Length: 435
Length: 92
Image 1 (cartoon, each protein chain N blue to C red):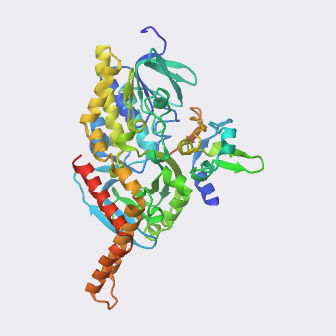
Image 2 (image 1 turned 60 degrees about the vertical axis):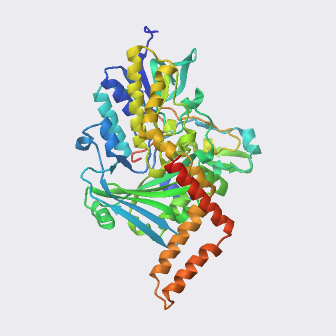
Image 3 (image 1 turned 90 degrees about the vertical axis):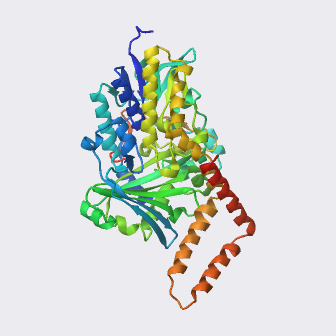
């Protein structure tokens, strides 16, 4: 076994945040690791909304703020609730001493991460697609690419949301349209000063918009906008089942969002730099696959590790990759690559924020999804109409307006709908805070 | 449609000569929704009524995988393009 050609300690499939974090952790421990990326360069097949998180990134790259290609540090997080013709916006703004997140361009940032990994000894193989895993006696022992076979004691799958490899060996089942969101995004070029003016920030500061409603009113979907140095990333993610059931085209929803009176002025006169699309794992805790097997572990999006409630993904990817890397190093030390030896990876995830957070929100998507028209349609409109009433000046006495508004909550819909909403909210709060 | 063409024009592709997407023609005939022709963010799939088969503009594929999961009969053969081919996102 040791005498095989193309044999290394660990093969990591996928040059995104999970794969790179895993590979660099293994290389730092002095083990041989080959990172295989199917794109022309690490990052070339990767898409996200817009921001990486500082604290988890620092865990992998302690001084990344000194040399990584960062766009802007985010100082403002806006929550915009859009109806067809109105916007209700809440904003949280704080200039943190240590920024929480930075916007990045993945084509640059992932490439930078991969370069750091190479400097620390990771062997990066680009433009190579792993077509299947080599399994011998129930144990993953390598990968088959288009050109040749590579062998390893451990193979780590960080091959993204579609992870055909995790599916091949039965760690993952078939995904359903409700388990993923389809995201479409446009990066729109705007002069730096224009961005600074429109978003009320300085040159190194950025602003994030989370957008509820708009063209997705009543649907399980969310819009987003991030500011880069000289561009703005605008997009949306919508559960694939909403698109299939309602027969909607994702880019038409995005076009509608871009035309909304709250959004249009922000991107006015911008030039489209790039359009992209990607799937986002939405299934949460209940859709996390088997995380390890004999000779194999699964990280990042491939393991469906996304906290959609908080727009977190790259951080779960990085830290899951790190924990898988640490597990691989221990297993290599003991020369034990069996399932039980790699179970440490799962314990690590369970003891970290990763699976704790996913468990906290395990009922959320289903709970909201079941009453999407109410929670994402009726109530947002109601909030908007409350503020419209509150700010109106029309000679009607205020008490009368309040009474009419309260009455409407009971007369807009049937009592049973209201009752079901209350039960859903109680169930969700219970599952998030106590269960 | 022209709007989408403008969008796709901004994407860098290195197209292969053969498709990495393989619909099952018999399943497509039976498929009532032809949902891939609706949800694909790059409009890769078009239904040819005369020929009664799916036209696959695989060169435009953004490799998201939505069609694979949405496919009504789960009959779409979907693989990644070869290592040197397909989409290259510069921004991402």
